[in-house]
Length: 239
Image (cartoon, rainbow, N blue to C red; front, side, top):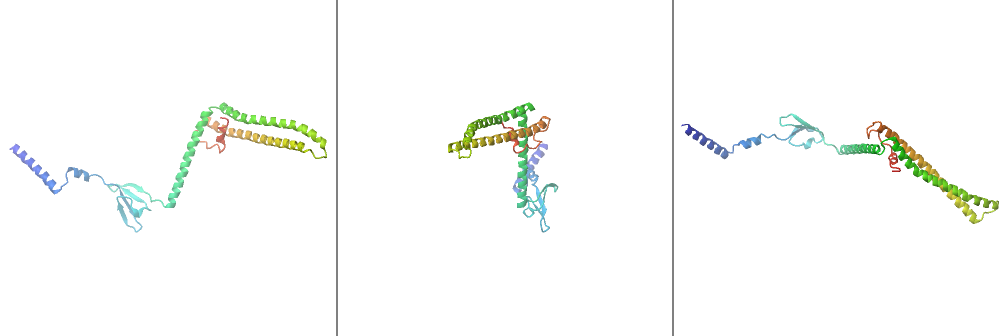
């Protein structure tokens, strides 16, 4: 008897399964698919006071705040209003400014680290200063020597010109004196330019040294601001 009852139960189960297939009842796989959660739900109130709901951002509320709900109705997120053209342009300008600020900060950090690597102490920085100044000093020395030569060349010309006091100078003598004067004026101008360059280099190195002293004392690279438009050039002079 027990065996007969088991056989009858098996036949009944098969009959039920066949009926389910014929009638289209959901099987285990279909039931599992139905249990999957649906996507986010967007909801808002439009300009006419109507409560709108959708499974995607709602066009009528793009200029409004939209709530994004979970399947159970709880708040998942809040989608801010879409930006107008002017607001979008302003945001892009802010983003560009922020990107430039980040790039400038990264450059300041890199510059300070390079300075510390190049100048581990004040003695190294002073050697670099002297090397930069020596180039200008050599030029100044050559200019001074040339001015001395021109002064020596002018003496006989002046002596010769004394014979023509109250008279027109010969064209050749006048041309020689004028050429000497022009050359001396050019050398004096060069000397003034060289002195200005000497002062400029010293000022640049002074500013860089003050910056470095703070870094040597433990300041974080990039935290001290910039050295100025011309100061980075000082770090390259004579290198």
